[in-house]
Image (cartoon, rainbow, N blue to C red; front, side, top):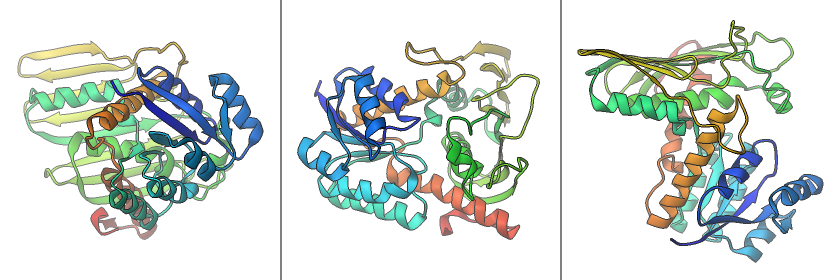
Length: 342
């Protein structure tokens, strides 16, 4: 097994999950860190025993020459960093949202393709083990041909405490959370030919939208609903669980609260607990997302070693990002759009 030396750019809130996940993958090590905030950089370096620390990404990549770079910064910096990695022929895994504009995203994909280096987007929700359990049930054919789907994420969890910038942007839930739910819809039901979206802001203390409802028409010939909310107070706080409903010609699949999977088919109904494991470094309720980080990063390492295209490649993620852009345009115009034309 080929040893992989990685470098991480961005030592913020979520990057600790990525560092823990890299540490648990055999044959992978993060050998260098970069952040413009020296105090934050040193804190991460001490926590994970990484001695090589840089405040300049170009200097780090040129000096260290890692086998890959993990870009864990915010979206406005992604294009420059991905193009830097491509210019040095260094494979890159990039945090979502992939880019602030479709033009930036396409330029990043094209830069890596011209350089012949892999590019993957850290779109991890489809890697959650409960979501993958749903995909396996659907692929088995036991509920027949699907004709309706729903992907739902509704919560009142205070996400602003750990990530205060989420309250400050003109865009919020579709760009930050809806992007995951839209990618799950693509993962389960296939690509989309049309999207109709409605958004609103319920919380007066934030700038962007915190509720979104989206209707998707899929190439497979049926519709799904994707709904997201950070303004929904429930008896039991579900964060960060994604609930799923699928109706098929021969039965149904339901992923309900508490990671309870129910499959009803011609032979009756069965129940399964598909709760994600609590990894040694993880904590509830984040353990679902933290497990998906470990799984997607293990997939990246496997793809690098095998020379195969990762599932959430930059090219694939253009379709998910186009859905986000089309959702905002649809909500603003009050009409439906074809995301392939964005």
